[in-house]
Every structure is written in C-alpha cells, then in structure tokens.
Image (cartoon, rainbow, N blue to C red; front, side, top):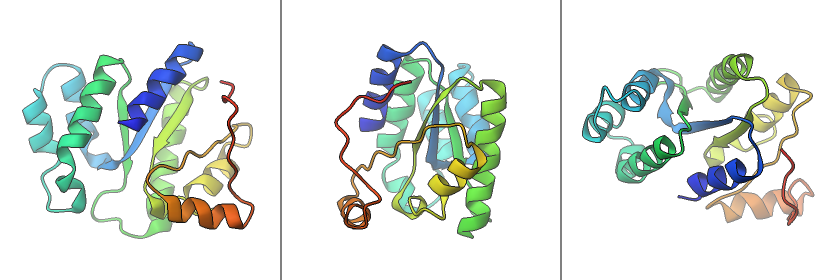
Length: 169
C-alpha cells in the first residue's frame, strides 16, 4: 500500500517515467504481469500464474495482487526483479537484479526508480551499494518500511538518517 502511495506522490511532482521494481515477484513471472497489463490475463489468472508456490510471499498474495492492480491503474508496469527459486545465492540474486535494472534504464534512462525490496537486500554490500557502483550518477535514497530493526541499526552506525525534505526528481 505504501509503495503505491509513494508512486502516486512521485507522479505528482515529476513527469519522468517511474520504474516500479518489485522483489516479491520472481523475474521469471514477468510475462504474467505483462499479460495482465495488456489485458490478456484477468486478476485471478495473474494470481494463479504469479503466486503458485508455498513460499511466504504466497501468504501475502492478495496484498501483492492489490498493489499490482493499483499500479495498473496508475499506468506503472511493475518489473519483477527477484531471482527465481533456482538462484538463492544473494550475490547472484543481486547481480540478476542489477542486470534487470540496467536493461530497464537503457530503455528509459531518465526514469525514477522505486524498488520494493526486503530486509535481506538492504545491506551496503547488497543491492544499494552495488546499484550505487553501477549507476554512479544516480542519486539514491532508501525508504525503510516495516523494518525498524534494520533502520535503527543503520542509524546507530550513521548510515541512515531521517530526512524530512522532499526528494528532487
């Protein structure tokens, strides 16, 4: 819900395209999302194609389907960035994610990226640090949601701040 609200706010302040990258869908399920966006799949078909496993994600599938439906209303296509079940290694997973991000940025280099990622991706050596190295000119702001332990741990090390300023896009 908050992810969609952030996108709504970003769209109010910039005409740049928004790339909504989600790590709660395996990248090998992108075709199902695209089929839903092109009206070839119904919402029920999307749910049955994307959330078929017994993972913890499946427990929240209704929330995620609602988010995807809201993104469709906003005309913001979600891009699945999670590795498939065959790629559990975090470094390999993050490399796959960076490849997907690079591909999308080549298509729309002026885009604002909004990445929904879980706690396991927040470490400096994981997605944020690797994205900063790969995209040196990109300003990166992290928004911590549902993760007070991670936020306060990073804040105690001076690596997270409370910024009440509106980001510039």
